[in-house]
Length: 625
Ligand code: ADP
Ligand code: MG
Ligand code: ZN
Image (cartoon, rainbow, N blue to C red; front, top):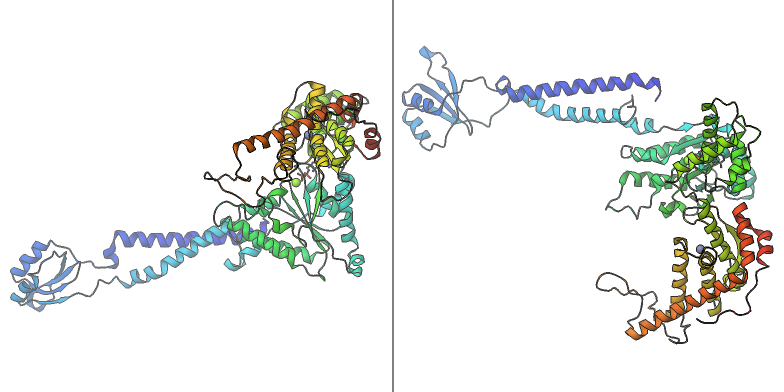
């Protein structure tokens, strides 16, 4: 908040406080001393009143529901004293009064004095206003023009002029993302060129990737490359806002951005606003977030063709939680993956940060990059700084290789909890496992062509992966192709068995998928000779059992169930033996590729094809167990 805002804000505070105090004081006085505003008449016991009536001392009585007020006879025509008493339930009273010839009447409902009356009407609204003012003041920088302008003044927007200093040169190891974003830069620089052809300029680009991989940095770099202003806001800022303020802020953000177009709006941590509405457990969900999200959707849709070029970049590391409405065409329909860097990428990032410190001649950054698989850009930046700190602490002028190694250990210790940094043994297992998939896949044509092997922990789940792509679009698969796929799935586990003689938990997903496929071959596709062409699966239809579990299978006899299990087991086990046979036959090649991938982490393209072309099918593949 700027200094200018201060006086009006503290003034409204002051007013609120004064109102509070006055209101409180009046209420207190009215409660404690009602007679000040009401009746200063002395109260007497009822028995005394009756005595005075019997003694003929009373001249007039006014009987109310809760109170009796009466006047004593005055001396020589003077008005007498007024007294009051609290009545008891006394049906005889009128008779007594009549008998003594006392003037009496029912009193009108008790009336407060005018002061009390006015206060009763005026104070409650004042209190509400005061409370309102008070909370507005707290919600952040109370508006000087009063209540109606508050939403507008709440919308803080950051224009980072010096973001223009960041360029693509400051970002490394995410070459694919940079290439895709280079196009966005073109849009921003020369929108006319695209509009002249009638092309719709993309509006929303979502940067997806693990934390610290440089999403925020990339967004700034796009602005820097294009030389346009950069409006940035973080999703988490919206979360704790006053109801309605989030939506107002979004509206303001877009309004201001349009005035400065061409420009970039960057919404960091989009998942904080954009969580799937369907998934928000409670009935009613989170209203504030929902309103903010709806406003964002409205703004994204609100650009018209003639509008100035405003490109909305957003970042998230949890794309799976986003509301699908955000990803529809015309909104964040472009997604750019910003992943952890591979060896070459890590080296480049290290070079960027090492250029800023003094290095000893013995420093070999390639070695550092080799030892840091799984590190994101932020981890590497941190690593270089740690190394420099170590050197400085030991009064050295330059950073040595040993400093780097020690820094790696420190960073890894910190990382272990939050991400997967593999130790050497694990890395070896992953390498052989993935090469196992690749080799089996290479000689089993049913699964498609192996495109890439990687042991860089990628994305959110896999430790390594083997990318296999069908060579053509396939809709029908033959039995032998399915068997090939199952064999390839088991290749990873088979490699672990052959090389290490033991198996790890890393293969469980493979086994799951292989077993599922085999089961479908038997129960859905009728590919089993024993069970024949019967569909034991019930298709889409669901069949609820008593305990709420679903039973996708037709009711079958125990014998059939047993036969299905045996068939599934036979298919998987045959595939397993086949995978083992293939890998044993190509043992040397397995070794060669595994060593290679441990060195470079990623093998793809022609290099990979040349290696895999050397794989051979053994003459005798076990047909069945
Ligand atoms: P994210 O937004 O993906 O969580 P940031 O962009 O905030 O990550 O990265 C934090 C810091 O880490 C950056 O400011 C930068 O110093 C460094 N960094 C991260 N990724 C890279 C990269 N690919 N190249 C260079 N520096 C990076
Ligand atoms: Mg970030
Ligand atoms: Zn696997």
